[in-house]
Length: 409
Ligand code: C2E
Ligand code: CA
Ligand code: CA
Image 1 (spheres, rainbow, N blue to C red):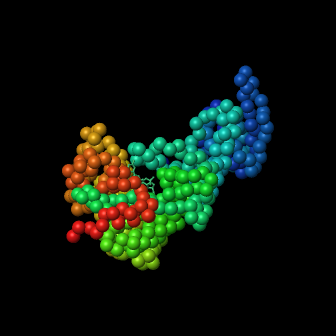
Image 2 (cartoon, helix red, strand yellow):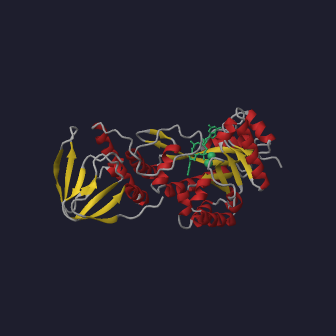
Image 3 (tube, rainbow, N blue to C red):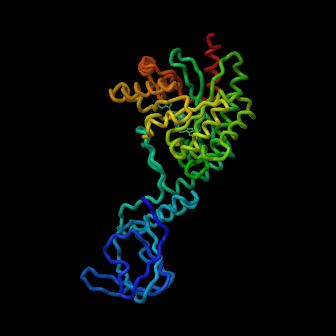
């Protein structure tokens, strides 16, 4: 849908601008002229509710609820109007500074509350287009209200400084022998008042407000430092890689590959040991830019994994267009694999696609020996899930590496 900027409209004296009872989707700013507001009573009698002159806003409720108009507005003189459509307002809000948008949403939420107390409890459209998580098993949590998101963003900014963020490291194993070959860094937030907040709640807020760039930089730095400490502590162990999640906001930031490279250099981790996890959505947002960024990362030696593969509804053709090394099968498919023939077929197909394109395939959410056996039989290379280990603290990860000893030659 295309939306236009506010347009001007001339109305001749005597014309009806707004008709009572019709459903509105626009408001008018009266620039010039005079109007009369007329209300028709339940018994059909019409009375004048007053006059409005230049500078007044008419029919503003329509910007919020597209509800039926409460009055008729008639031009007394020739009038000049600026038209503000609901679609235009929504588009502008979506383009606006994220904080401004959230504030606006809070204000409109309040307006909605006031209205609903007055029994006009119509379902109002949401002002922002917060992307819904399309992954099948990830819609359980109630979406946060605008005020909660605004508060959360502010608290998250503080958390970066106060040390309330930490990482867990979930083992990724070679499915053939169960040996740990890497870890995925997963973010945890222990809020001083609220307690534990799931990343499924706060990552979307961090993305929406642009804070994710600072958060991701912190995660990458901390994950590389942890990997370096693990190297020192387990001198005889293998050299596990570190998988770090990134969002589209990270990818469109200037100098992404360079910034990551600088962190690697500062922490002494070679680029070959960093795996970037991104979702299909990240690639689709700005494909040309994503290709360029991924190439630079790849040229530097990092590898790229597509996370939650199979849930992004995007065309398969992008798989050959983007420089991708690893496909990560979403845990929803693994979970349903034994109960549903379709899911099993999907898992088999994804592994087939990955193999044909010479990519490594890793399954996530592997919870049972039966999952592991099935996936290995289908040709999956790597696995991650509670069967092999939950996300671990650094100490626990260290213990696991020590217990495993040096890798077999
Ligand atoms: P994800 O990247 O798909 O991460 C895997 C999630 O699956 C993790 O949840 C992990 O704890 C969970 N998981 C692992 N094994 C199993 C299993 O066997 N069964 C089940 N049912 N679940 C398993 P977590 O840690 O709550 O993270 C949720 C999501 O938050 C992540 O999904 C990722 O999208 C996001 N996230 C976490 N940390 C970061 C981060 O540092 N940066 C960014 N951008 N996103 C992050
Ligand atoms: Ca991930
Ligand atoms: Ca995943």
